[in-house]
Image (cartoon, rainbow, N blue to C red; front, side, top):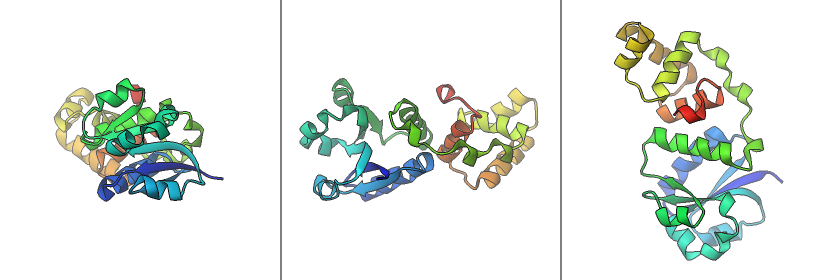
Length: 193
């Protein structure tokens, strides 16, 4: 039976966005969305390795997830202090995309299902030149083009040229996806972002 991640979230857009981000990180794990606990319960004969549960849903079904704390992440709008104090991981969906991606990557490396992670060879570092890897590392750390140019002692136009090449080679301009690529490729350490 294939491992699955369940997202129990009544907001369809939140659910779809989170599912897409998780697919980027966990390509060997099936990510399933449920709009309610009833939908989830009807489909519960799967091997779930992790649950992302909207805060109100978790609050109403606390007993069902209390024994699964290490496998459950609460989806909240804000820091969800009460859930952290109860021992759950919390994912604040109001964070910017880069911070959200970083949080998901941190959860990945701390999780018990990290053996089901993407094959790092898929994210071959060979796609990018050494200079592009340097520029990417600074990009995902949140530096501006001007700052990157000063650090690498190159012109602003050269930084922009490298950024465009990176985005074209990786087929994305999303800083979240670029962050995921950089971490999974070993270009940056998860603790540096």
